[in-house]
Length: 87
Image 1: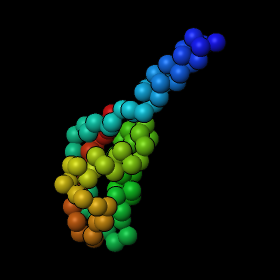
Image 2: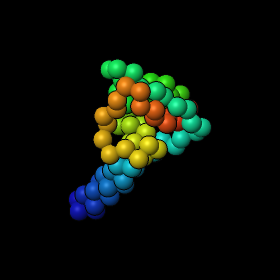
Image 3: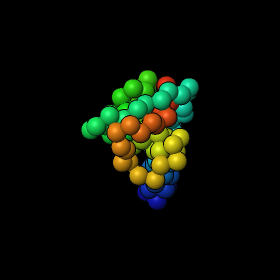
Image 4: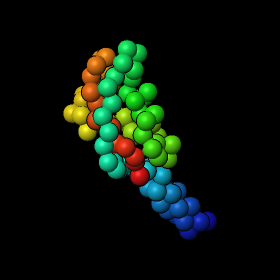
């Protein structure tokens, strides 16, 4: 019984390690997005090919890193660099 418990716990730990570290999106190419009134990083993200393979928060973090942004606020006329595609 003790061996079974150890095997089950080891399996749960390994499974947790696999699911705890999802693949991070990698930028392929670049495009420039000029924000209009009402645009957000989420609406800008819709221009990126391959985005559906990743969690939206991962893509937003990638955009923030590419543009040295601390927050998610954008202003009309602001130019933002986006990946053309993520893989």
